[in-house]
Amino acid sequence: MKIKSGFKQLAATLLLALGPVVAWASQAPEQLEHFISTVKAATGEFTQQRLDQQGRPAQSGQFSFKRPGQFKWAVKKPYEQLIISDGKQVYQYDPDLAQVTERGVDQSIGASPAAILFGSGSLEETFTVSSLPSKDGYDWLRALPRAGSAGFTHVDIGFKNAMPARLELLDSFGQITRIDLSNIVSNPDLPADEFTFTPPADVDVVKMQ
Image (cartoon, rainbow, N blue to C red):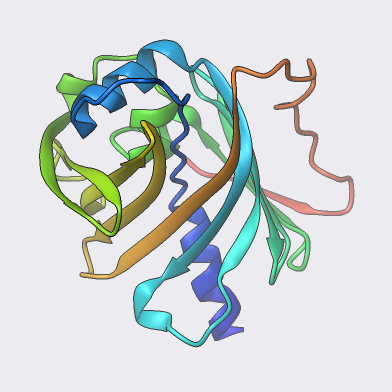
């Protein structure tokens, strides 16, 4: 159960980044701004792992989002879990525990990395963004939260071919979570009920204030 708890913590650090391939050679912060202004929705796949837990299997699954604030982060392996937002409420569903946790979008996203990718507010109001040296084949930027209560120190976003492809989150405990994104489709036609969630009748629903 300790291993699964670690995976749940990873899933709760909901971090998504997607973007179109564009024929330009700008720095990573400019690429992020372009992504925010042009990509209103996307789908794709992810793998996610805390780097100090080498040897344990990474989480993997599928995601979709529609800004502002609607997203689905569906972990398929090694344990199923769903995090989904309808733009007002965020639900975290754990089938094994038969439990759903419900929070307001502002509580869940706030100044988190998700605010960069799903939000509609001004990026400069909540983050300080700067370029980093290229490494591992990516153009990097660093986003520092302006609020001290964000729960993480910074998030680095790596771009490849003008598309956000890797995120590395340093949390307040000094732990790094890495997320790799793949098979991204920008601005797809999503079903009307893509971000609708009704808790199953046989699960406990915990509403967080």
